[in-house]
Amino acid sequence: MEDKEKGKYNSCTQDERKVLIELFMEGIKRGWCDSSGIINKATVETKILQVLNERVGCQKLHKHYQRRIKFLKNLYNSYVYLQRNSSGFGWDFETKRFTATEEVWQGYLKAHPNPQYMLYDSHEQFEELKIIFYGTTANGGNYLLYHWQLYHQR
Image (tube, rainbow, N blue to C red; front, side, top):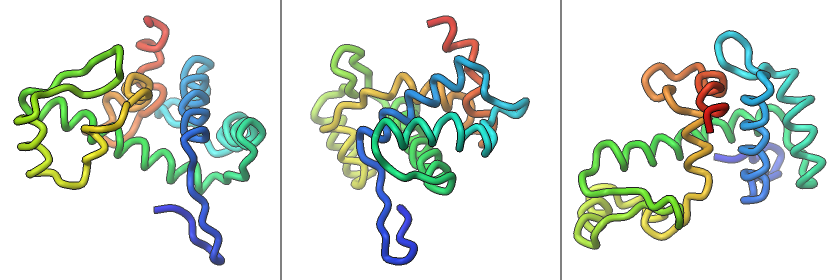
């Protein structure tokens, strides 16, 4: 859900999402995370949101950032669920899409009717989301810092 306070709908565009993920990756690389693996509010506001707002021409606040984190983590979790719990799926690194036979897709969509985007959309940022959120599905914390080392091994 997006912000609808005072009648103002504040969505996130594809460009904003791409820049935000790029800035998360930069935060990992530069070590902006605290000991629990989270970027604090002051750092988010000065080093992420300020740059995001300038580059994309938006006016995002910390509350929008928190909602984007939640959205991106849920998106990542749906990707991981597809790969781990659904037999017959693969990943095409070139096209950035999930692969499966038509029969496998139909079975999956019958059981999970909402994520049709999984079949049709390119998932260009899946690799970055893996770095950002890997290891957070079990305990819900330690995102960003958790795979700082993985990022540097790329």
